[in-house]
Length: 496
Image (tube, rainbow, N blue to C red; front, side):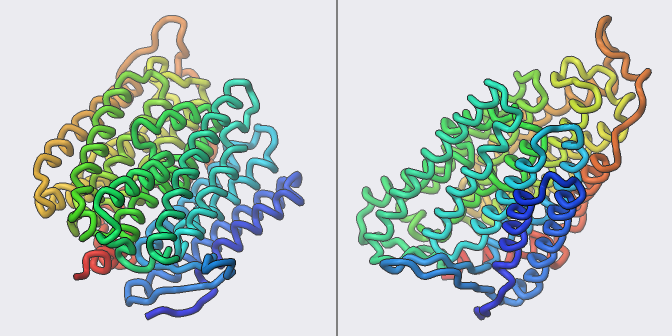
């Protein structure tokens, strides 16, 4: 049942308004923090209010504008889009508080908070886009809004990282534009994302396969599928809240969400199977999972290690979608949330380490748990969740992934899952061991002599996000959590 409602557009209005008001009056600390805090809480409230209806089969719609030749900007909240909407809006609440603490002594706060809010505006628009044209507009605007955040510190290295980011993401957007234009022509103007598949085999197998790879490049850049991943590690020069935005709130999640939309809404499960595209996508995803993990092991810089971990984990979602089985689809959808909370926690912990001690490299973190006991305890929880230890959220993703591999007749991917878990342990456990058990070398900081911990503005949010990695694991099946929404989405996407 479709219901016309203001609920889909309300989070966009709040995020957009927070951005505009911050541009106007963001030099005032009180108002700047008030705009972002109130907007983030209210936006999440509106998103959460749609969950009960979604679980009852309600589809919330809102029309923004009808343009030329059948092109329109419309919003439609289905279960798949709602998962991304929940992730970006809920993470905004936590990251906003963390950012207020982190940016306390940084410059250009007005610009930073304004573009951060506008990035959430874009993420919410992507989540609820009813058609490919709307999706493209929000998707490209996200690249533009996040560019000033990537190059925020203004150094030569930051400017180069920002330029690389813009070239990659706008270049990917160009491929997406071409793919959507071709789709518009061959479907007679049908760009809707409201049905499981709008393309048909009558367009020709070879043609549709080529079109799929144009789409894959278009969304694969933000999803950091190799070899389109190079922008992501270089963007780690940005302040930690930006790293969290890129990895857990908006950008890369938008990329893998785009992959899910292409697989399930543009092509559809039946056509993907008929064209044999699932196997090809699984090979690409598996390659990225393994190679990115090996590269992560070699990284000494903590944020770069986490960045390559993200590249691997994003392709976990891509590979799950490639199986074209119901359980694997659930794995792909819930891992958007599980990865966001877990990796967001890890990046915010890394930011605390750098802010409090100046340490950026893992080799210099010897004994750092004595200085940051709570931070490193929370880092450990999140790392175990990322590895897939029960009862953390990552285990639930891996369980459905393995089940989906059996359903999809791709048991070889269970081996990929096992190897991925081993590699995750190989690049996370040494960080934990170093922090707790290694003694600092001569000339390094003696952490036990320094004051303990950080401010509650930064510690509180990581406690919240780490708690969510437990909630999404232990209580995953509760109504209203991403798993329940993903089950509803899966039932629609795989209906005969």
